Image (cartoon, rainbow, N blue to C red; front, side, top):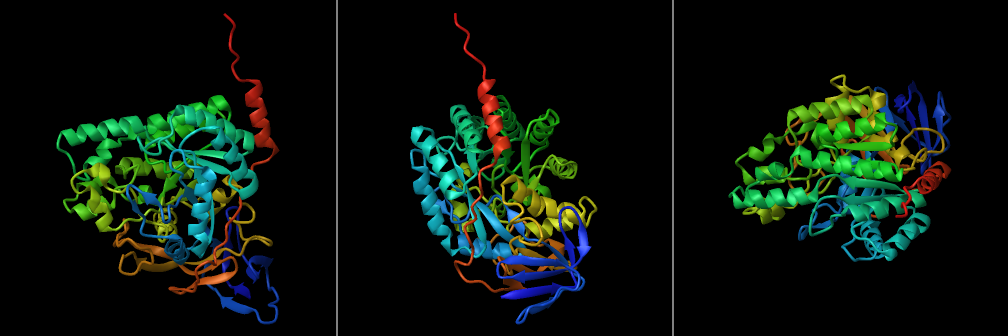
Length: 479
């Protein structure tokens, strides 16, 4: 199938232009003025709309087994919800159990994801260490197109990676041309604070942010940055939620260290007052880690995006219904951690960012698509509207409005942290891999239309860093 998009303004990260876009098959064939439409081509009249690269969400958890249950959205419903909001690709997470083969877990997740309706890739979590893990990391990079590995510094007694795992895995990732990523929270401190709060009789959702204050995130971020600095490896820090962690990233980057920061749409919009709501279902519906912060931290995060110290926006889409959240009714530490957002990320960031003057449309494209594509080695296949790129395009009406509601959302779980928010800026059409997947409020998808997207290892410069690190490693001094 071919399409000619006519009348839109094309907005890329680097520039905007009035141009037509020709889609042939799954690729963008041409971008320019007065393009000829091939025989049988469907013309999309898009006057007054913006044509932007489809959003890439680098942090989702579809069909995730977690805290004794499984998330409400699987790879079909979750990616379909994303398409309705203009997100055309995700990078999800393979999370092996401790002592489980990384490859075994990877193939399990690949099977689950076969029903996806948008393109997808995976980060693979390192939850333990052995020579087997070391060898399997190489196979994932060279044979399966994985170029990033996740490390949870939180979740003690479950999937937490200690400093030894971080050092071993960061070193191996550098050797392989892969990017280490971290969930930065001090798991020991979180566990200790949880136990102390429970002993004091503070058992409700209001205890959740008290058990994970900004300092435990800042400590972990600083520690991961320090380890990466010694090993001379790049580092990507997921869901930065507080100004102290942001300051650690800015400081490291100011010293020439290659550190990238991700921020969630929820952390930019929702503040910590939600945990003090007396309605358990409402408060528990907002339980995620790191928790939502005060408005002071929100302001700092926006400034981090504007200054270029935060590079990508994500959702950590991880939906649970009220019945699942009720597992923590008597003990907040047992509330499954996670919130949704893939359907609304683009709209709420446009509304709170572009409409307020915090971001330009080009910067919006940069933080919702292009930066992610470049950091994770998907560019220029994705993240840009240009000949030869994947035909992942969202046609955006900057003046249209909608009110976010669980009654009209495609995502499952029955809860939305942006409930009732009216946004100006709406996806009207979404093309994914050349398919007209979303059209004026209607999804046009079939399970399995999404493709697994390989991400090549990083090149010679990354390998040179590994050689440099090995040559300049501290040497033992004979006694």
